[in-house]
Image (cartoon, rainbow, N blue to C red; front, side):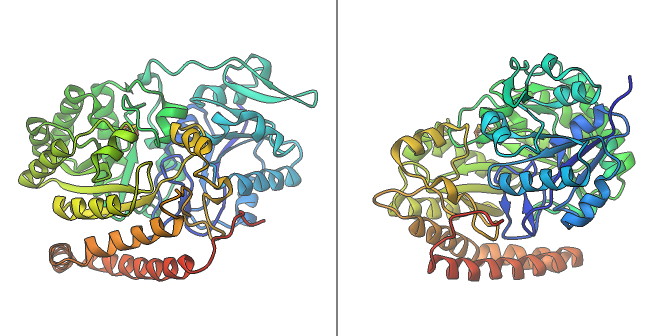
Length: 484
Ligand code: SF4
């Protein structure tokens, strides 16, 4: 069946801005890093002759991106709450260049706010809510907009919302994104500090059974049932990935929680072991020892673990569903097995105070995971945290990112200001990393591997400049608007 000449686009934004759907916190990074635009690559894989452009990861300017968009009939822009204004301006530029191009927006922001998103600009013809893969395929095939589930669009000057689209039940019906990566992306442009370079990341399933109140994807696009591709299909996709990208040092499964179905994860692990691949994934801090061992024996190198807080009450407040003692045991087991952990923490969640910030810092140092990431609590529209924050007036809606695209502190409490929380993040990083053990680990790694040495030095410089900038920002008020 004929399809429109379709462009999938991560629009140009702030320098170093990672707004792709793979980025759970859309912001300019402290250290240059980008996730793969997997959510755009997926519908691109369904539409022959489509094109995927990831402007931020490729440092493409507005002019260059517009040039590359010439000749396209349909443009699908992935947008996010912090980048929305910029993305809409880019949609207008596309229309100015070619008034006949159809422009659609996708992503969690428009899934939650379809009406407002369409009203924001006449340049946007439609938005695709929920999971948008087959919605976009329908549009590209020229199906009348009124007949496409999951679509909101402009009709006679008003906004019309079609019925919801059901979540995809048969994940094996989705083709592999690997061929799109090969065709359209330069994989060397994708960095994540704790993953080996070059890496490739992809999903083997969507949705997460957990109910963490701050977490964007399961509450907006992916849902709370972990829907998966079969182990057989995943293993054959990975065999093809290894063939197409022999230079890749590590594959990352970006499923919200790859370990949510342990039996399946173990079956996939054994297949990856037979292929001799090194791999990593997201995991909750409660995977039993015997599974960790099976994973490790079959190529698992690293787990990305959301610990969030060292205070049990805060974990309960955000419905994390994890006990601190279980998380400690899990971490000890990983260490015993030689599995590397990148631990993620959030400051400023409901219940936070000066003492709980200190508790979290001590907890992270005790766990002594290999690397950490500390984020500011970010209440994205569509999440329970957002609703709570609005109801309790903890939140200045216009302050998700600063004028330079870095993440700003968005939650404030009577007893804890945004500046206190931002200062806590800086203290957290400094106290964790400026200890003999992490410094020793880094020196050892750098001594063993010259590639690692160059990279760590570059990241170290970027990180120090981030700390310096944060200090300056903490002493001046944060700008309240996204730049024009
Ligand atoms: S376990 Fe992770 S992916 Fe699942 S809801 Fe919680 S934070 Fe989100």
